[in-house]
Length: 223
Ligand code: C5P
Image (cartoon, rainbow, N blue to C red; front, side, top):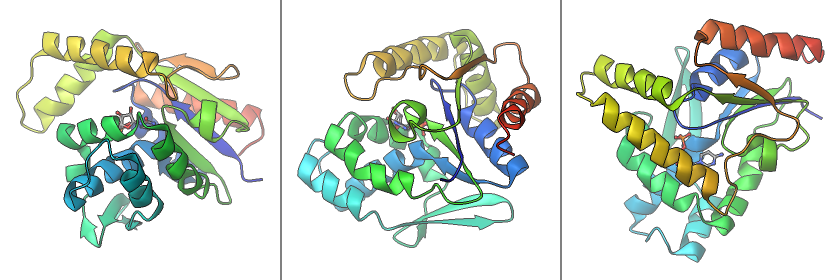
């Protein structure tokens, strides 16, 4: 069986960056599961499918016309042969994703597609339920978090770097509200797997977190 490292955690905990770096260091494949929910939300909107039309969403999820391609070290995501890598990261598409993500049949329909990413030599999978639902047998599960204030500060800096204005206090409130929704939703709620290694990155650099995870992987003889 292909080895899998799962990295779950709340919004803006740095999962995406850390997962990419760990996968790069190990030479393993990467699954950004949030991108699949974002792709489905975007595809539904493009096809005029309502975000509560479960049967139609399930049909779209099974047939998502998506391709992942690596170009100059960057992941390019194509939906119906169109590059959607940038639009996928917008708040608007994040909102579409979070609406389709609460539907259990949709989650079930995306399950096989997520599992198919587990190919040799290994997979690093990031999301909300990678360790608790999708890859329950993974030999290394990470639950990555940081204080709401620190996560808001990181998001604030990201937005500023992109030239967008932002209000730090509003971002803290927004992150608290999203945590509340993710943790208390009835379907695949965000929680650490019982066997997860919990890492609080509030006072850690990205390098510190990546090295900590690689140490855990080496201790378990995964790499
Ligand atoms: O991680 P990202 O922000 O890209 O996720 C987009 C949305 O998809 C989030 O609202 C999250 O709740 C949902 N999601 C999920 N399960 C995952 C990954 C993401 O429900 N494994």
